[in-house]
Image 1: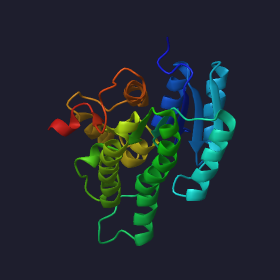
Image 2 (image 1 turned 30 degrees about the vertical axis):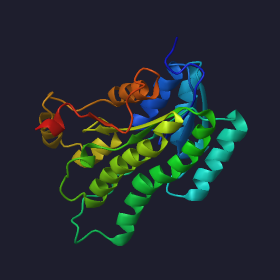
Image 3 (image 1 turned 180 degrees about the horizontal axis):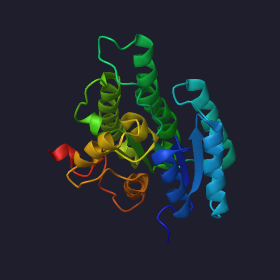
Image 4 (image 1 turned 135 degrees about the vertical axis):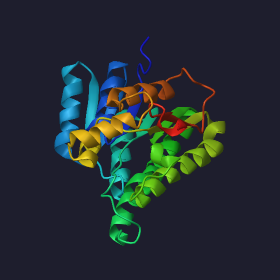
Length: 252
């Protein structure tokens, strides 16, 4: 049997990068996938890709930093499907590299509101529905920047550290309801964010590859595989953990 056969699964930020790779994989593993994405064109394209593979997918335009958007998303999910089995709270932004002194308050707010508050708001609705089922699995997106810091990334570092704390708190409170909540912490992954960070410069890209003991950066599909495993019934005794998917970056 496929790992997510018959499951209703939400993927935020499902229009590109890790989110898109995850949405496609989940559909291949039997899930009906709701792709929530701020950019409608990318979200619809991901859904069309899944449907072209005979998978089941639906799009809902959502900005996870806005409570009204999340409320509308869950009204859609419950009206359409009546339940939610799993969620990958993946939507996030990195922002520009800026020192603490030079970081503007509105730039701080945008990153924290999307990465941390968005995860908090999503879990409020996800947990409310999963409690009714007395089971469920939630995976939150953190980063290597959730356990180490990178220079000129104070808001991003803080948001990803916060997600790990939030994941632990949620797991502590809701594991007794049969709901597992975990997080993943990717290292550098071949996505749009990576190419923005390096500016496409071959020498800078080489440094990123060399920074990982495994000798290369990761691929979106490699993160998706780990999230799939966490969402499935395979690891029933894992809750409140953050799995680092970083080619050994954080063991240095």
